[in-house]
Length: 415
Image 1 (tube, rainbow, N blue to C red):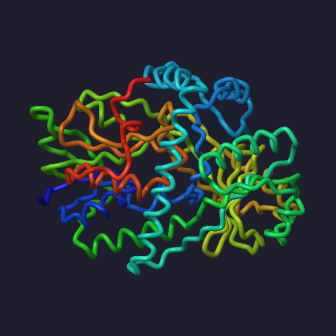
Image 2: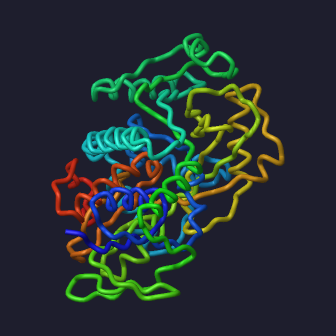
């Protein structure tokens, strides 16, 4: 049965939900407070990452966060503040950062990533799109033996889970990446990963959806939601009032502001990340994570993107030049011929990633509302999990059996 569906949020989760919902024959409207050209869905590293199966809420991360708190250039920065939502999130993060919980999250994280990679490839094969997509794997590059050993332990676990992973010496790396001039000791190579150019895919997907009758309302903020009998009856924006049969909340870091209106308090904190684009030839052909610096490097279509840092400091878009400079410094340390110009640094951008406390997204319906499906909380895996999330959302709204077990992603889960 065709339903009138309103999606709040026009990032990767929103447009992928729209893609699969319109394929099921639903009438879809997407609302976003931006003009569909900015945000984390446009400035991310473009990774599809089955390799990232260890949750951000890993044992020891709290102590690392405390240690890095006073370093303005650290990979992870958590700004302390007396905000009730922030304090609840920190407590939930601490409760989630146990070996037992991380172990239990490995399988659902990996399987939703593998499923999403397949969905991206299916979309690409549909011949409706021409977006950039390559499956060259991911190099976890390290400069110290200690970090190399830690990464290989994770790599061996990946092998146990069925991924193809190799431990490469510098000589091995130079054979597959001969002109990048890497200054490292070695790398753990995940063959499972793929990469894309996000700011090419997003406009292409939006154009396609408009051609299929999906309605887009840009620069329109949802200011209120009317609830009747545990169902959304009206969605009120700063410009109009809309009605729907079903709603999808894919508003990223802003999602908790709207869930509170239905009595659901999902813990999410905005994690700011930065990117610098280098439009010159870099000779980098394989995506890499610079492990000690926590910087992601992606050879995109026509340029190379350097992205990194996780700055949990509330919702703001202020560019911290210390963090931008830290990314540039890391690039120079790992790639001896990369020296970013002041102009390149001045064009750095940031995006806010919605971080759940346990590293798992929120996908599904809460008991608090019958006709609202959540699609948020993806943190650094937002781009990777877009199609999988969209497919699951469409299955939930179409009353179909979901392709994956979505219990681990339940919005009502207790931390």
